[in-house]
Figure 1: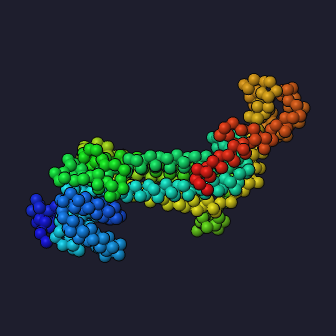
Figure 2: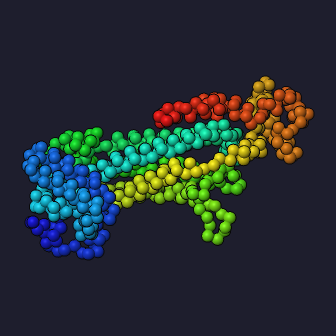
Length: 464
Ligand code: ARG
């Protein structure tokens, strides 16, 4: 095989000195980008098919190389290829391995192509697949949410604002709030897919190529939706990665908020839920401890995904067009984001099967803390008082009851009448927990009928 230069590197022709060992190590990305091997081979096969079609190489050459790439893939999967910093990245490793299985004709693979458009293509192939897997995982989690909501449709818990008990809500309604968040996350990933699904190969280094490529054909072989329109943009664009990690960050923040609630709810102060032993861990010193580590880790891992977002933003800021080696650093934050989001979604889907709802405790918690104060005001409105006045009366009622060490429903009718003579015996029936729920029937509110409809609608949406 033809020597490629003094340095025997694939780009070594113009070099007379060998690369410094430390620089070689520093420059290499193989440890990270080796996971792109399948995408890289898929892209090369499409490129070869296109080149044969356009007679840039012969069909026979293409066949030999395509077969060779198949062998290289198997070798990688059987750990038969040794990765080394001297071959820099996954592209060079594959080309080198192809040379070993197919001979010198392997030197034709890189015709009309640069590693700049090649890496852009590889990441897009990878991220298309991973986005779909993530969407499916998120749908799986939505199903777990719905299952729990359906099973606990009528369970009532205190709803909070400022983490202070506010008004009673259905627990299922609270869960369905997360269903809505995840639904938007999925929509964001689906929308982002439109911009990932663009085929950049053919941009070559940055300016396009002198070979008569058929980019539409390559796009069709690889099942991309469209080809990129501008060669400079094709090799410079990492918006799709920034966008993906943004959406992943939002999704992780949703998981983190859920984590915070699960952690609070499983504390003895709340005791709203019990997480099964298989999804909790103990303490090496305190024998009584059962810790919600899974939820804490999901909350913690949100930090690294948001960190990855800062990483890619900072990396891209101020980069002149077109390709810059800085962009090689885009893969670690991307891969870490994909891995983190996948495992967090998976672990939560499974954990949901392992959470027991302590409905009596939730209901009890609704009895204390004047959760019916708004409804006392609403009661007075129903008797003809303007809401602001009614609010003031209910406020005085709370202050009075607090002083007496009572809840509002524990006040006698005489005490009520003292506060406002519009109040009659029917007040007690008006401010029960169940009535407070059923009256909140405005669209999107927590009434049982509403929530049942929302759960049914979600089941239709997911086809369950
Ligand atoms: N390993 C490189 C990356 O991940 C591939 C592109 C290298 N291009 C170049 N001209 N050095 O970005």
